[in-house]
Image (tube, rainbow over all chains, first blue to last red; front, side, top):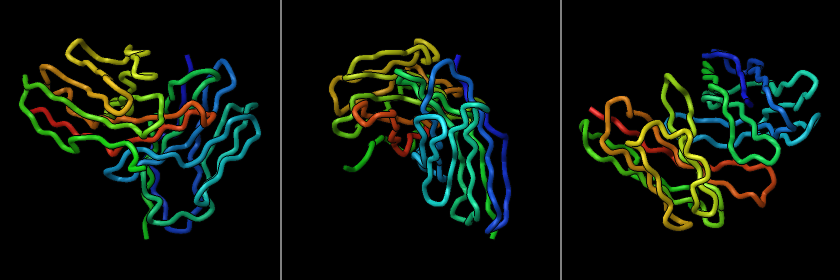
Length: 112
Length: 115
């Protein structure tokens, strides 16, 4: 079945460091891909999405590119802030589907 | 819109008691999802509804769990009887198929502790 694998955390970075969180997926069709973020004590919220190959999603300085050839959707940010500390979830919905498949989540700590 | 509204935010109860969690989705959203989040198992989909009809309840762990959606603006998740292993954060989320890729909007969650 469809699945999402993302790098284990926690990831600890200093402020202004470069961030990469790896995500790969397995899907039979042509899924839409997402990154959701969960801040402490809150529900998940959409960070960015991409609906077809080579699309780049971006928001709040974060970016991810839908790479069909490597079945990947890695999250990047050039300069992280303390306020970026959160848990990041990679996710997919397959074509014609309605169930979002989530990865296990990666916790990010950013130190001042 | 106020977003997805869940209640209660926190619930502490004793083993064997009935627990009811409530959710008000975003107006106009036609899909509603119940998720459970624990450290051990991460985010699990329990059940989802389309236009108030349950579509897939394969994630509901046991018969002790039940969910209803009597109308487009309200859903409940009930656990009877509750057990300590049910302790988790339960999230409700809604989405709208008309927006293309089904982006989920989550509530703030209900943290359940069963003693």
